[in-house]
Image 1 (cartoon, rainbow, N blue to C red):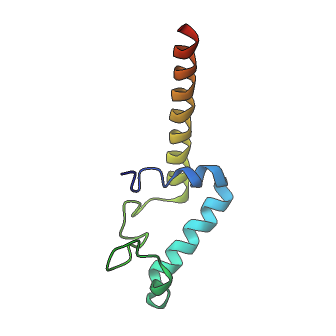
Image 2 (cartoon, rainbow, N blue to C red; image 1 turned 120 degrees about the horizontal axis):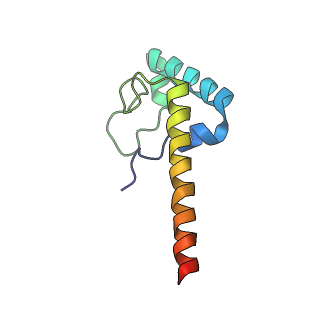
Length: 88
């Protein structure tokens, strides 16, 4: 199960400016109880807010950097696979 492990990739792909906007939105939703009903529960009985989940306390910069690290790892993996395939 992938879970939340690749959630930061869209932060990197969207660019820093859009990531900052997204973080501002989720912080606003987390702080306003009336907006909690719009958060997808994803099969749970209660929604998990940005301020409670695995990204609690992380800034847009942190999420962007983590997404960039994931992308770097994906690229490295693709290069390694291509090299191994070329050696066969």
